[in-house]
Amino acid sequence: MNSSTIRVTEIPVSFAKYYIVIPVTVGCAVIAITVACFILILIISKKNLHTITHMLICNTCVSSILFCIIQCNNYVHLGFILWNTSNLSCQWRAYLAYMSIASVVYSYLVQAISRYFFSILSRKYCWLLTFKTHIILIVTHWLIVIIIPISVFIRKDVVFRPFSLCWIPRRSLYHSAYIYLACYILPIAFIIALYIYIYARIKRRKTILSAIIMVVRQNRDVEVLRNMMILLGIYIAGGAPTVFYFVSEIKLFYTMGVISISLAVVIEKVMTIFIDREIRLIIKQCLPCRKTHVVPM
Picture 1 (cartoon, rainbow, N blue to C red):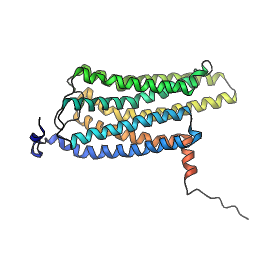
Picture 2 (cartoon, rainbow, N blue to C red; picture 1 turned 120 degrees about the vertical axis):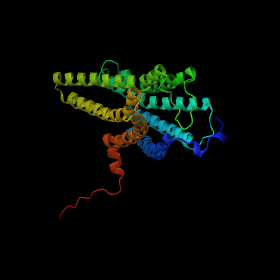
Picture 3 (tube, one colour; picture 1 turned 90 degrees about the horizontal axis):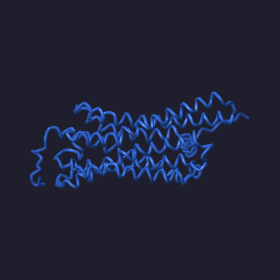
Picture 4 (cartoon, rainbow, N blue to C red; picture 1 turned 180 degrees about the vertical axis):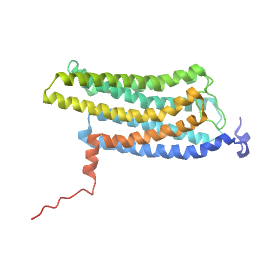
């Protein structure tokens, strides 16, 4: 379809919903990018935040920023760049969209594997707790998320459709199922299983050991696990409507999913600041309006 054939009078009624969805989604993406950049700058600038845990948080922030930028690009093409009707361009947008979604989810898988190293394997394999090991994990994470959506170019299911986002159509059942499983469902299932295993091992060890140092360390592990599960739960809630749409084909779930994913990224970034103890304390110290205690003479 040429750009000259796309006129305002040809815009379908179903496209009108995007006039609400696009501003809300782009607004959420801009807020998420701002908060993620703030977290990155804070961690990089404060030496006491130069830890493995915060390096992995930075990796998740980079994934979130990439996801938000690609989301904005897709909606700009949908609402404004109507002349770009190339199938190859649409395939690239679909590839980048799936890659960015997978990058966020798999970044949490990297955090789960790291927590497994610290909580379970730290005594036996000390080399797993080094920065070098975790850098290898991060590089592997990005290689995996780059490879997973390559099927978009192989199957050629994604073609340009006027007034529609560039996704794998639902009629390509096996390809859609592969993308949903590889980018979202399988990594989340593995993360949840790994966290349940770690939590069970920590609780079991806590009943056996009574040393104060071990108890403090295990309490810290439980706290970190709880924080990660909270953040992961936000992403699961954000992606649930899209999964429901794939199963039921109810259009309402599709519209909800488009907004909920971007909204989940915003909530997750804000919650990262609130539930991370070290980041929260540094922000409190930097605030100009701090309470002054009046000492009576």
